[in-house]
Structures are given as C-alpha cells and as structure tokens.
Amino acid sequence: MTLDKILEEIKDAEKIIILAHETPDGDAVGSCLAMKLALEQLGKNPDVVMDKVSRNFNYLPGFDEIKVKPEIENYDLAISLDCADFKRIYGSEYFDNAKNTIVIDHHGTNNMYGDFNFVNPASPACCQILVGIFQYFKIEIDKEIGTCLLTGIITDTGGFKYSGVTAETFEFTEEIMQKGVKVYEVYKKALDTKTKANFELMKKVVDRMEFLEDGKVTFTYITNADLLDVNAEPGDHEGLVNIGRDIEGVEVSVFIRQIEDDDKTYKISMRSNNYVNVSDVCFVFGGGGHEKAAGASITATGNTEQEDIEQVKNKVLKEIRKVIK
Ligand code: AMP
Ligand code: MN
Ligand code: MN
Image (cartoon, rainbow, N blue to C red; front, side, top):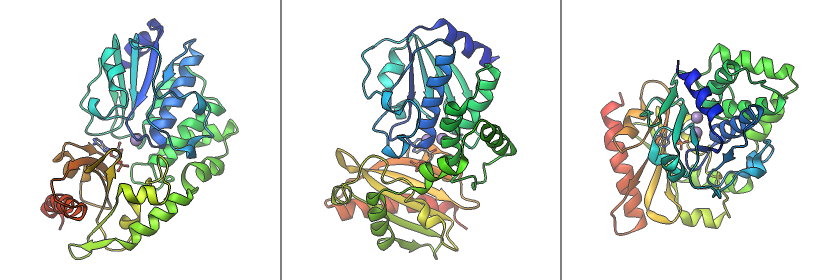
C-alpha cells in the first residue's frame, strides 16, 4: 500500500527536503516541523524550506532551522505537505528537481502531483493525517512532535470548532496530553494571540465590511499600503476572513488582499457556514481548498486600486450568486 511505499522511499533517500504551500499557516508549519522530527527518528537529516513563517509559531521545535533557500539543489526525495497543487508549493523548483516526490495533504482539490500521494479530504488538518502515518511508521509521537501536530489541528479547525473535527481529533489530543502537551498553551500561542498589526488590520477590515446579497455575503479587503501602515509581518492577515462569517445571517465571507510585490493581483480568501461550497467557487478562478474554507488569486485590470478591488469583488460575487439561496 501507499504508506509502505512512502516509508520505503524515505528509508532509501539520503537528501530529503520538506515543503509546504506559500504563506504557510499553522497546519503547514506544524506538518513540516513534525515531519522533520519524525524523519530524524528514522535517522534522516531533512531540510525544511518554507516561505516567511509567522513569528507566532516560534515556540515550535525546529522553528529556527527553517530555511528560506537551501544549499542543495537536487534532493533524493521531496515531501510536500498541506499543499493542493504543484504551483502553490513554496520552493516548487526543489520538488521538480527531486528524484522522487511524496504528497501528503487534506485538500479536496488536490490533483495528486507527486509520485506517491496520500490525500485524505476527510481529515480536518494535514497534521491529523500525519498522526495516523507516524503511528503506521512506528514513530514515537513525543511531546515535541505532538506540539507541532496539535498546532496544525488547532489552527485548521479554528480551535476544535469546525465541522471537519472528528472523534480521532480528540482521541489524539487526549494521547498527547498524556505526554505532557498543554492544550491551553498551544491554543493560546497558535490561535488566541494576536499581533498588534493583526489587530490594526482587523479594525480596517471591520470598518470596510460590506453586506451584500441581503446580508448573506460579506466583503472586505486590505491593500499593501495597509500592511505598510500597520508594519505588518508575515501572517498578520490570518483570521481576518473569519470575522464576516461569524455574523448572523452570513453564508459566505470574502476577504481579499493585494499580494506582496504585485499590486494588481489579489489573494481571495473565502469561508462559508452551511451550504455553499467555496472550494468550487474558488476552483473557477484556478484555486481551491475545502468546502468551507478556500482560496484563489485574481489579477485585476482596472485603472485605479479602487477599480481593481471593485472588479475582483464583482467577479467573485458573480460566481457566489450562482450558488447562494
Ligand atoms: P486561506 O483563505 O488562504 O486561509 O485558505 C483557505 C484554504 O484554502 C486553505 O486550506 C488553503 O490551503 C486553501 N487554499 C487557499 N488558496 C488556494 C489555492 N490557490 N489553491 C488551492 N487551495 C487553496
Ligand atoms: Mn494550510
Ligand atoms: Mn491544512
């Protein structure tokens, strides 16, 4: 079975690189650092390469060893975690150059771009898939690995509250509590601690929030000028898309932000509450994700920033109107 093949590939490889999606979230960071520790138990010394990681996660073991650019170019094995497609991998060139590739992910839109793919969309976090994989590999899930895995689970489930949470989520949490992991500490650090810049962005996002389609859709945005204005660091936009979804009567919350280095391109984040599959909506724009949390990118062609924002908003709304009741 696939997991036996994956273990064989790992055992046979000397130079291993671990990668995740760009603008990594808690699940991406937690998965990569947990995998690093697991491979170390198997006698390997892998590189973890990731885009600018939010300093919120600096409590994780191995955080200081994350590389932005590795010295090696051709790895024996590349492992991509929490990433639905090849073009979203940060450091995709290393994946491309590697002799063998493994993909472990939980996105329904994953297009199986590895030599070996282990994808389970029923799992609420990539970190939760790793629990089962590590158990199968007979890796000891100690306090350190447990902390990494719990970080991904807590961030991707909004603190155990999203619909994807399963009984296994709690069984695993119980197990690692027995190992001495303090759930409230991870929760506080991974989810409940806001940077000052994140709070300042929240004020802007709330102020600009529009209610559309009879209050069933919210729309809001931030620009690169906003990020400069509040001295934002990587990850400071996290969580802003959830604000709209939590308002009574809202089915879909849309949050867009200009991407760094390209003021014409906007990263779309979408969340839904009940029946709208935002992954399908984002798929129309070349993105994807999960039924209730998804993303995509759209490049605008307006004459001004406000025109660009209106254009992106209208494109997204046109698709949402097709599915909103
Ligand atoms: P975000 O709104 O960036 O927090 O993303 C929500 C979910 O959708 C996460 O699980 C992302 O990994 C996924 N996602 C975001 N953007 C894309 C994309 N362009 N393609 C595929 N999945 C995405
Ligand atoms: Mn992720
Ligand atoms: Mn994830």
